[in-house]
Length: 350
Image (cartoon, rainbow, N blue to C red):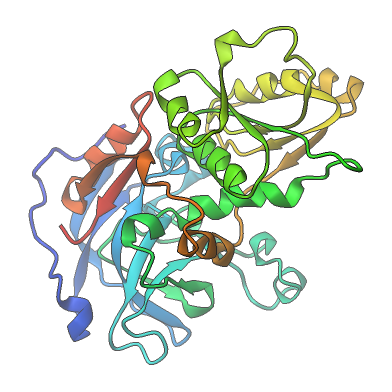
């Protein structure tokens, strides 16, 4: 991917802006342009909130595999990237001024049947922060609808709160569990990247038996340290084939689905978390012969994620691999794209 050279942008954000409620004409932001080039710009237009929106000063943002797929051409996005964040609502906001918040990234129309029945995640007219039709959060400030914001308790620091969005997606797996009578089946989580590990940690925190499967012993050790069963994928054998009641595919790789179907038992289920810019070759005969359920799973309940963090049920900070100022956000995405790297954070205040 084409990126800005280090040091091209050097203006520092004013850390007192939120407290004073000041306004500026422009913001620093990481932009993906129509040619697929990444660049940190200091002259991106200042977001102007609509009447139902709040202006938010971004404090931390996380790099997600989806961001990397967008750079590779997934979904045809252009503009400000980023959707995982915690921020401070501008002091001048009449409802939430001075509150720290995270946000549901799906912005529905609010009027269609999906929205009015509590399923705005599947509004046909929805925008998605930093992914589809809406600027993202790799910026000093962003404007978002207040209905999408979830306040963060003071007991949850920024480096915990920035995990709220991917944690909500991880916990959403719980909504798909359908054990048989008297059964509490182990869930196999395939993939030891940042989302795969977070799913394993979230299921374990919820009391669900889980096995984390991946290629890297050092990363699996993060899960093993919490008492989670782990397996290297190369060590799987005939005893594992067709044995799992539920497999969560979170490899981030086009080949992951085939491996997940290999693990699933007859009449079992496979939950898909991977989005990919590359096509996914697949022989569906296994799905037919073994009568498997294949379930897509995307975003979850942000309030549930914040509540788990506030109760101390999960500490994802061991997943943090690096931190970068916004001025070096192109380097942050390059770092995050390296094989084996876990969560990379961007700090717009530096």
